[in-house]
Length: 123
Length: 123
DNA sequence: CTTGCCTCTGACGTCAGCGTCAGGTTTTAG
DNA sequence: CTAAAACCTGACGCTGACGTCAGAGGCAAG
Image (cartoon, rainbow over all chains, first blue to last red; front, side, top):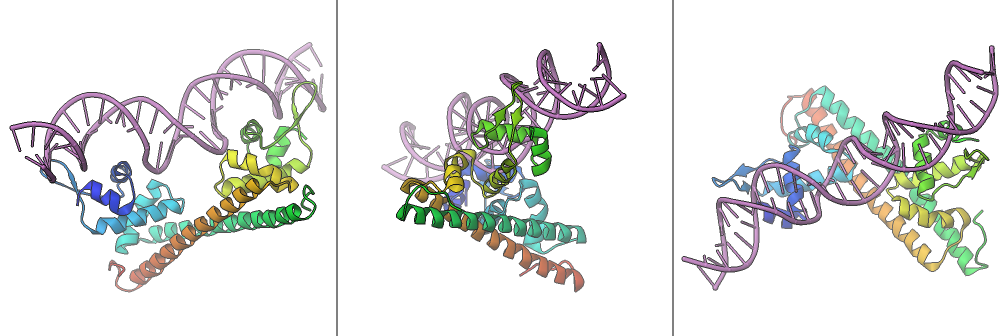
């Protein structure tokens, strides 16, 4: 398929797809006239890239890890990096859970304030 | 205390603290010569700001929500925003969990590959 | 008094992940 | 055949959370 279709299929902008190629995250065949051609499997690949971006990995890290994630090829170094990234994600999850719980507490307290007296400090 | 001490106490750069003030996240008294003076409670405040930044909130949102979080003062609108932010954090947690699980799977598979045959694709 | 560290206010630099415009070619629909 | 739509390659713009440098004043110690 061409880039426009891949974009609509994945919900990612054409610009972003070109950017992924620039970052060596997503390869493409070229037609004789120079237009990008993607196999169907590229859609999954794009989803994976999105997922890793969402996990906070920068392009470089994704580029390093993708071969391993896709092919299962791993050197001990790559395995270490994978573990390190997973640990980083874990701690970020912890941070987010803390923040969410804090907000939940605030929401509960402020709601109670609102329904009772209004305008009284939380603790 | 002065800004340098607050910085070392919280592990946040002096520049960041001035930036927080610029964004109306952190107030300070000024000495006659113009130097910033902070009470001890500012350290907690900075931690809270950091936590909200870590949760992915931009300065503007933090500035809007901080009075509510700190004082428990909330209008219905603010409560809605708090809930919305909490939900956003929740869905981000979901994304991160998915990504982490994916990485864990990859790590397990690649480790197995490494110990057995080496160089065989994951699925 | 002066040395050295801390602080001040601008103001420009950075980096990532794209958005967007320009100017030109290619593909498709009628 | 032609007009519209999609594609191409630069290349500049943008946003947020600071880093960093410049130039100047403030403050405790010897």
